[in-house]
Amino acid sequence: MVPIAPWAIFGVVFNEAKGMVPLVYLIGLVAMIFTASSYAQMSRAFPIAGSVYAYVGRGVHPQLGFIAGWTILLDYLLVPTLLYVFAAESMSGIFPGVPRWAWIVVFLALNTAVNYVGISFTAIVNRLFLAAEVVFIVIFVVMAVVAIANGTNGAELTAKPIFDAADFSPGLVATALSIAVLSFLGFDGIATLSEESKGGRDAAGWAMIGGLVIVAIFFVTQTWLAAMLVPDTTSFSASEANNAFFSIVESVSNHGWQVAFLAMNALAVGIANAVAAQSATSRLLFSMSRDGRLPGFLAHVNERTRVPERAILLVAGLTLVLGLVFVGQVGTISSLVNFGALTSFLLLHVSVVVWFGVRRRSGRWLLHGVAPVIGFLVIGYVLWNAETAAKVGGLVWLAVGVVVMLYYRARGGRVLPEHAAGASLEEDVR
Image (cartoon, rainbow, N blue to C red):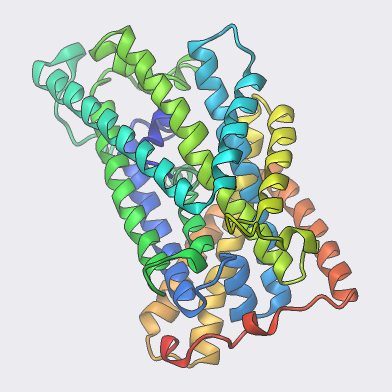
């Protein structure tokens, strides 16, 4: 989840949304706000590493928590692979002579080293890339505004990209939601850093909601401007869709700027996005291992850097294998990522209702009743309309998770006392 996320998929979203790309992100923001609200409530009650695994396990039941962690683990394990495949595609467009797998190896090695150094270094890297992304966004905004003011290629100021009554339909909403969910995924990774947060119990929750709103503003602004620069385009061809945004940049500037934007996208996706994804995944494995739900060696923490080094190295190894296997198969990976994330989000909303509404009898019915129920219905609707391949693959993964859970349960694995349900402070769950 970075400000320039729409660049790589602008053409695909444009085709599916009939040009109303900004509307896609506005709808996506509304859908994800409900999920972020549930994350905020649970991260306040349980400010520990583990994200949805920890929240469902402590808020509802440890076994259901394992299932939640297992489903989102599918998302977490595949997102780095997806990002490296994206980055490799962009780099191959600049350097066609270098094989895509080589770029995957380069980016993976660099990001693993960054994560191994520790969370502080990770934060520094992210800030540097964020600053660079903002600079490129400003450059694009200036280019677009000048082009629209001059009427370049027929560009004009219009609200049609935000809403066009002639093309809008209920089916468009379903498509928009499924695309927007993939674009926003990653905000939940903040929850895995709760134990390392320096801002108190509310920090992770507010960071998620604030991050969603900020990136949505960036998404809407950029896609609205980009859509206005192609007023006579109804759809992009299959060969144009993947690099549509960069072609638009070239049409209002020159080839040099197009290459610069391609390079910025490749580096942002392959480093800024991927380094955060690997960090979140390793900490989820660490949390599940610490609770006896995965092999104990993953709970090891480096005494000097204080990072779960074995989990980091395992994630790197798995990502390397998956990256080499799934090169070019973006659709398959994306559909599986959606299934894992959305299923875990459903359980997250259930945990809010159970923990606050049932167990604590909270009187805050809006936050602990209405919001999670709406979130559950919205996410459920998106999941129901997922591709068949995603459902089949996801259910197979879920079945494997049940077997793993039963195995560790038979061995006597159980949640650590200090992390068991009911361990949060009373004043934080009123």
